[in-house]
Image 1 (cartoon, rainbow, N blue to C red):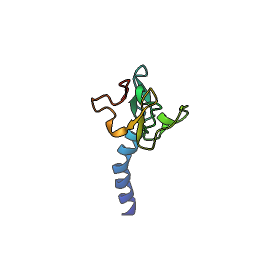
Image 2 (cartoon, rainbow, N blue to C red):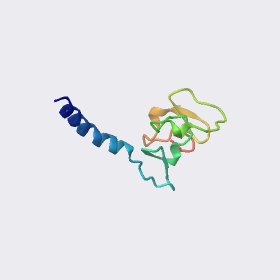
Image 3 (cartoon, rainbow, N blue to C red):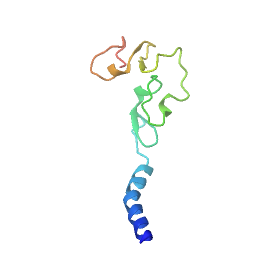
Image 4 (cartoon, rainbow, N blue to C red):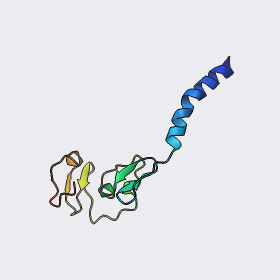
Length: 96
């Protein structure tokens, strides 16, 4: 009986493990691969952790840093990350 329960549990969990273990294929000309997700290249080193694993903010050289929760425009300006990709340009260069 215990073995049957273990087999049933494994059958339920296996599809999730297999799906999670598949790396995604990103368009490297326009996207950055976080391993299991793709983000736009513009999201690299913007002071906002877009990758679940934080890879998009590792090895970045910032001239300064923005407060936690803020997005760093390409110009170095800081705006709230809530305004990122909202269709309005809060950054003077429109990089949000």
